[in-house]
Image (cartoon, rainbow, N blue to C red; front, side):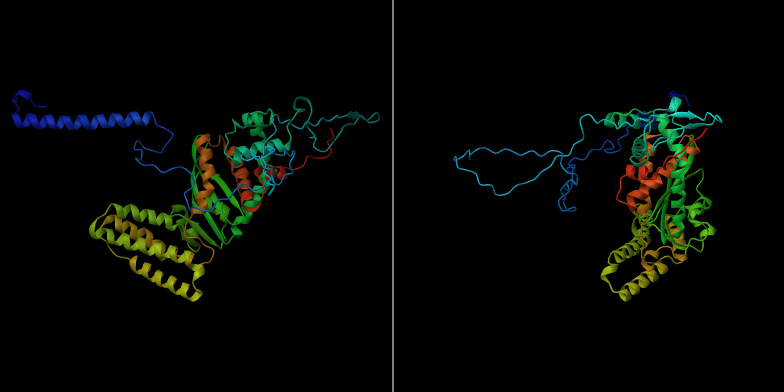
Amino acid sequence: MADLGSLSREELIALIEEQRRLIAELRAEMERLKRAQNRSAAPFSKNQPKADPKRPGRRPGQGPFLRRAEPVQLPATTVIAEVPSCCPACGGQWEQERLEVVTTIDIPANPQPVVTAYQVPHCRCQKCGKRVRGTAPGLAPDQTGATAHRVGPVVMAAAHALHYGSGVPVRKVPAVLKELTGISITQSALTQDALRRAEGEVGAEYQRLRETVPAAPVIHTDDTGWRVGGRTAFLMGFDTDQATVYQIRDRHRNEEVREVLGDGFGGVLVSDRGKSYEAEEFAGMQQQKCVAHLLRNISEVVEAKCGRARQFGTELEAALREGLDLWHVRDDLSPDEFTTRAWELDQVLTYLLRDRALRDPDNQRLLDGIGLQQDRGRLLTFLTVEGVEPTNNRAERILRPAVIARKVSQCSKNQRGAEAFAAFASIIQTARKTVRQTATEVLRALFSPIPALSLR
């Protein structure tokens, strides 16, 4: 820096203004770093609360109001409500017009676990010395010594349903069970039981679900981040009308996708524009790209443009939205009218996405990316193949439980834990979709019976 005494008045003023600008930038950076070090977990107001926030609760007209259904259980007790002996206003006598039945459902104040005691004789043959141990339904062959006192399959099913189905961290499941049932169990017991069952009956059911996926006419798939032993991994979800399957792998390539789809999948794959789905191995596969993702990409470009630079994105967005509107009124149109309008829309998109050079680089990027999908016939499949949805919302919904579990846990400590999470979560989500049972009931029915005889 030159000697300040040699600077003119104008040069000193310019230097002061530059220093002011630098000081303002540094202060802003300091504030940003302070906020980064004390991040809040509540991403709602962003320090800019609304002056007139909306009231919580259901908005008028947004869906029908349904009251709680009458319980199917028989009442344990019946209480008759009392009325005054006479009218408090005039002293007249009452005449009953109707009898209303209301109920209150509660849990026992002090729930008591059901304990089954087994008297197990240990016998030895007086002739050959062979030993035999008594058996009984519900008694494990190795339930002796230090492991003589165990919890039953219903407790384990409830614990795994809380963890894999409801997202309760495994370290908190014992406290929840203790509070609700009075049963004490350790975290390690839950973990070891989950790993053992994932390699047994739960793993077998999981493999059966995986085998049903390639036979589906439409598959929705998406992925999200995961960690296995602290290393970055990917959790992939595959959703059909009959099954929901998860898979956790270190990488997300077409090879990992084909582990579930197989090489002979002949249905429609609904996905985003991830590189895994653009591989040459999927060149002959029918696909539908998520229109919601495309509209979001277009909106980001249009909002940043002005003048004629907005025209391409605006026309493209209008064409895609017209396709969504046409899909929604499909049942109201005749087959011929629907087919004609779908063909006309396809012609509009083909012309709009024709190969050409645009002046704006962002518009050129949109043209190249979305135009490639139009050339491959992956934009309007939902109008030509019945049963195909225009968005990938189904796949994103099945990932939400995993995202919640990721926020409250450390994901998976090892690959065995990752396989257990994928197996249990797949079975529970599939059961919620296809059968009217709770996760606890499904897991309880799945757990294999204990062998009837144990010799040693």
